[in-house]
Length: 210
Image 1 (cartoon, rainbow, N blue to C red):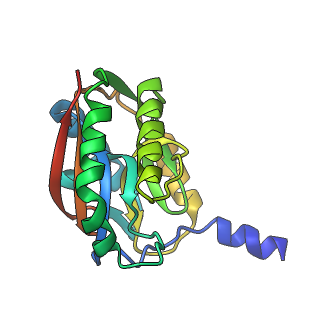
Image 2 (cartoon, helix red, strand yellow; image 1 turned 90 degrees about the vertical axis):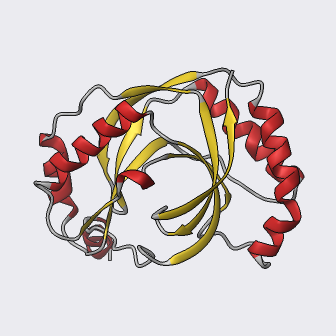
């Protein structure tokens, strides 16, 4: 049984939701133009060596997810569109109040990580990001929406459309030199995700930092 579990862990996990319509509301950070260009170049280097079955997330979809307000995979036990319609104005006002006190901060790429579900560009944790997430979780709970603290800061560069040996990903990742990617975060965006993963999104609000 343990050997079978181990074998499963060593395979990539195809994501059947790629390209499907969803309804999700996400608080996001978009990389600054120079950083975005550097991430795209990194994707190209990886894509040249990765096996078939890797879905490259297009440049317009690249982001750091601060917090899912309405999660694409969440079970809210209700019509999520109606739930959002009833709370959206109050939540947006509360976010505006919280973020108006937040100062500009910097994010820096830490490592490339291959996981069973995706290939990530991990970013170094910043206290400001933790504080924003904690404040957003608190205000969402006040409006009856549950949210958990994300376990890392990252930009998803690839997802998987096929299952194959995860060691193939690890081998490529280990050979690719990571450029020194960093940028200053001076705004956050509230986005409505319409096609997964953020292939089609609608900007709902922009919050400028101090």
